[in-house]
Length: 128
Image 1 (cartoon, one colour):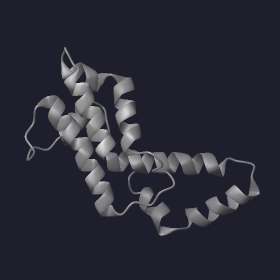
Image 2 (cartoon, rainbow, N blue to C red):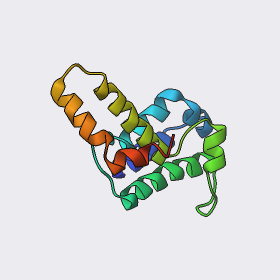
Image 3 (cartoon, rainbow, N blue to C red):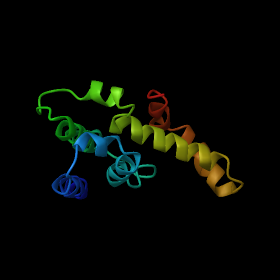
Image 4 (cartoon, one colour):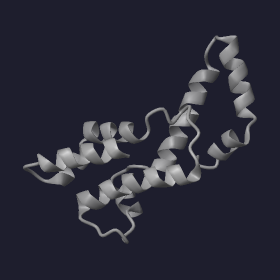
């Protein structure tokens, strides 16, 4: 979270033009998401940790669109065609699982078959 806020403040400190253009820039968006979702495919976060990271993600939208802390940014994310961090985590985990399931490695297939029967995997399917 610290690196995410540091990167966001560094960008905002050097911006000479509209911050909204930076938020719409695909490269900047991908870089910020990478900071928050590093290794999320293989780590198991608690609901509290995911919520804290999602607050960071929402605060970036609040800063870009000059919203107050009590205002929801769900609509802004929708109009910017972006997902909230909970859905990003679920999408990345499911994408990782799909890639692992297509490997020729027997060990990885065994790991996938064990994981695909877990409650965590079934909870991921709720998002999509």
